[in-house]
Image 1: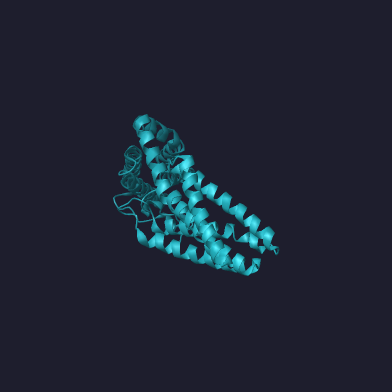
Image 2: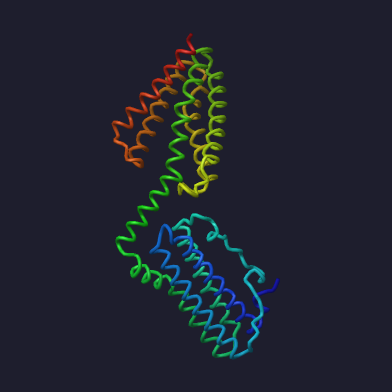
Length: 318
C-alpha cells in the first residue's frame, strides 16, 4: 500500500487515468443495467461514461507528452486510506435512486481527488489540467441536470416513475401484504382456540408466538423459493422473502401480545380490537397500492377474518 502523498507526479497522473477509466466503466454498467427499464436515464449515464472517457484521453495525452508511453498500473485500492466502493452496479435489477446517489458520490470523490492532486503537482500543464478536471467534476451535477432535461422528457419521466412504482409494489408491497394477511388471519384460529380452550392468557400467548414465528419462517422461505424474479420482474428473492416473513410474523404477533395481560377478559378484548385494526390496515394497503375498491377490500378481509376467528373460538369452546 502507498500513501497518496508519497506518489510522484508521474504516478499521480497514472492514478488519475485509472480512476477515470474505472468511473467510465461503472457509468457504462449503470447504463447497461438501466436500459431495459429506464432507457432515458440509461442514456444519461451513457453520456456520462463518454465524458469520463474524454477526461481519460486528456490525461493520457498529457502523460505521454511528459513521461512517455508506459503508464504504470496504479489503482485506488493500492492507495492507503481508499474506501472500497460498494459495487451497486453489479446488483440487478438496479435501483434507480441508488444509482443516482452513487453517481453523485463518485463525482464528489473525483473532485476531491483532483483538488488534492493539484497540491502534489509542480508542472504548470499538469496543474492546469487537474484544476480544469476538478472544476468539471464540481459542476457535474449541473451537467447531469442539463442531460436529464435534454433526455428525460415529461413522458420519459412519467414512464420511469410508473415503472419504479410498479417495481416497489412487486418487490415490497405485494410480498409484505401477502405476509401480513397470512400472519393476521391464519394465526387467529390457533390463538383464540387456545385462549378459549384454556382461558389462560399465557397459554394463548405461547401458542400465538409459536404460530407467528413458524408462519413467518414458512412464508419467508416460500416467497423466496417460489420465484427468482428473473422472468416475473419481482426482484431479489431474498428481499421478498425477508419482507414477507417479517410481515407474517408481525401480523401474528400483533394480536398475540395482548395475552401477556393476566386477565383473560381484558386480554381477549384488546386482542379482538387489535385484530380489527390489522384487518383495516390490510384493507387500506389493498386500496392504496393495489387499487382495490375500499369497501370491497374491507368486506373481503373482514369476512375472511371473521370466519377464521369464529372457527378458532368454536374449536376452543368445544
